[in-house]
Length: 315
Image (cartoon, rainbow, N blue to C red; front, side):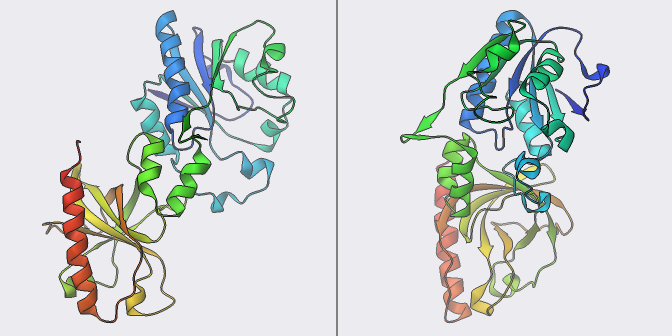
């Protein structure tokens, strides 16, 4: 897959020499609804013998449209993860448009002329709720009048689960509540975050449960405070374990939130190593214990429960 950055305006070098099928969306998380759009576009590209391209943005549009501080946005899929997922789902060309204030001021007609026609789109595919400006005048129903029959348009209906639309917002809310099981169901794969193993307080090793303290990039969304069954990837290998997202309240108040992963039967030194955490299942909520002994007893039960859940996984 080729990844191309577009710093508006569109440069000739970024324009494909042959027509393409172009899928549109921000695609945070590349969840089941997004996969429906990409899958429909992939099928159309295959039918026509064309490349599949996806157009997305470097930052969430809310950063420009609503003035949300860029540093406060927590993504389901930051750029590296989004690129990885797009390649997995069969995208040939991935365009990241840098969402500048000037780009945000384009009229709907200018956007269509400069970026859809400009990118040599033979077919444009997007979800039913895709917009490219003010919602009432720049939506999928009005796109044909701007397209002026220069490309075909395919609108993909919403993907519904349990009577509700599958959406990035719904997944974010589930993660914030610690419901990684629901989030994974809506994503269609198990949620992952990245990070680096840093030095913590090393208290875990004194009670028989040493942990890798994983510091995630600021832009990644970490599941809410709870204890989870996880897998951790280091040096290209996945290892089973359990993770605590919390403040270690048993050892005092006012502590920062940390991600601490205990790996089963693991004895390597992985300080400073880049890792990836796969959030498999929520084991329980955060608990405060009267003593370290009480914590150790609960950790023993958590390990048993985590191993039993991991044993039941099919992949």
